[in-house]
Image (cartoon, helix red, strand yellow):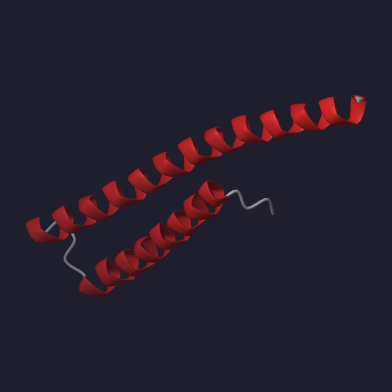
Length: 81
């Protein structure tokens, strides 16, 4: 009986932790998207003139966004690793 209660507490703790992780990953994804928008504005206004640097940063932020998105999907599906 005690094992069942401990398991129930663990499940509830994991649910709470998953919600918090999802929240922070969502904020991270939004920050990533916002940074990409800032890079575009800098490029369009001429404040960032080097296209190689712009393209390098955009590739890196797009990759980061994909990784964060995949983490969000894993958390939503209940992945536990």
